[in-house]
Length: 250
Image (tube, rainbow, N blue to C red):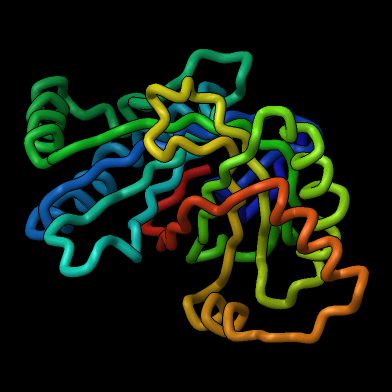
């Protein structure tokens, strides 16, 4: 099936397939600030190659490494978000493979150091529901904003339809956005890091575009006001996360 860039999500998170279901496993990993660069280096030198091998073997759709850019005030930890793009009909592949035929002893040492750096971690799995994509020859978006939504279960269908049929066409005309995607959280609630029901991922080229878009205050007509009030009644934004892309494999 034809691959197309989705500069999404996430998440979301950079590629998708036309008319194909896709799960995105969002793996949150937190390390101390002083260990952040070593963590990035190990991903670049070892693990990204393993994920690339898994992709080339058809065991995975894609893999991204993002860094959370808006942590708590004076936070002394760094949080990374790994996006594992998976075919729902195949077993989840979180570890990748041995991309450069490293020795087992070397990989074991690197894995141990990786685990020793981790302060905490968690996983949320989301299902891609729809979005839009730029042309395949464009560079992946460097920033993403993940909006975690709370929705009453009785409103799931109405919410999805409104996002995909009303807001998706509007997002396509937004000059600041490079990609947009709606995702439903399918992780059981007791294991859900965010305790949310949906994630909307918006993708940008840079932080300036995020600020410029947020700075816009435009007049609304009667119809737009009614539309905004309707979506506000359907969902509540629990939190927003700004992510910077560090590594990506397709």
